[in-house]
Length: 280
Image 1: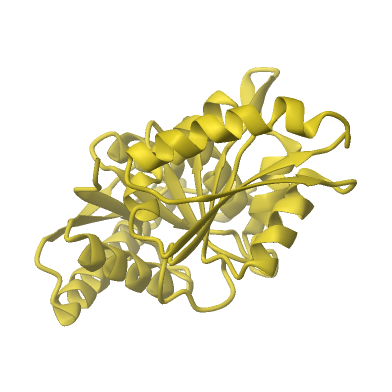
Image 2: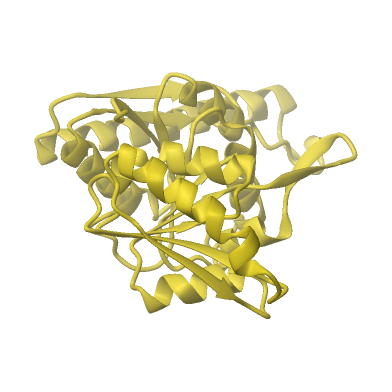
C-alpha cells in the first residue's frame, strides 16, 4: 500500500500557506499526485436582509466574492506547486459547503490534509466543526497539522496510540505508507485502571507487532498506566519521544440527528502539538 493521491484544503486562511507547503513536501517525498480543493462555502445571509440595498444584489455579490476567493486560493496553490517543482498536481474550485466538498473529493484521494482550528482566530468554531466533520465522515484518513509551529518532516519519529479497536486498526493500516518510512515507530497502549494490563493488552500488542513486521514496519511496543485523560496521556508521551506524527483512531457517537466526536478525540484535536493522522 502507498499513497498515490493527496488532497489538501485551500482557503483564504493565513494557515493555508503552511498547509500547502507541507502537502507539497509530502507529495514530493511520496512521489504522488496532489489535489488542491478550494470550496467556496455557502453564502452567509445578513441577519437583517432588508438592511441590504437589494437582497438579490447582495446574494449575487456574495457569490461573486466567494467564487473569486476560491479561484485565488486555487491559483496560489498552482503557483506554489510549480515553484516547488512538483510533477503532478491539480487545483479544483467547488461551489459547495466546505466539509461536504472535502468529504466528497476525499473519495478519490488517499489522504486529506487539514489544519487544526486556531482557537485565537475569528471563526474558530466553524473551522473546528469543519475539521471534526471531515474526520468523522471521510472515507479516507485525515492528516491534521497543528496551527502553531513548523513541521518540515513527517513520521521520522511516529507514535501509534493503540487500544485494539476497529478505529485504531484502521488508522494504523491507513498510516502504513508513513510508518514504513519512519526511523522510529512506538506503539503505546494505556491502561487507565492499572489492573491486568499485561494479561489483556500485551497479547494484542504482540499480535500487532507481528502484523507490522509483515508490513515492513519495525515498532517498539509499550503499555503504560495513566491516571490522567487519554488525550493528555497521548500528548505527554508524544512530547517525551519528540514524535512528529501521532496515529490514532477517531471516535464518535450519535447525538440527536448528527454524530459528534468523542471527548478524547476532540481533546487531542484541540491541544495537539504534532501532526495527527486520524481514521474513523
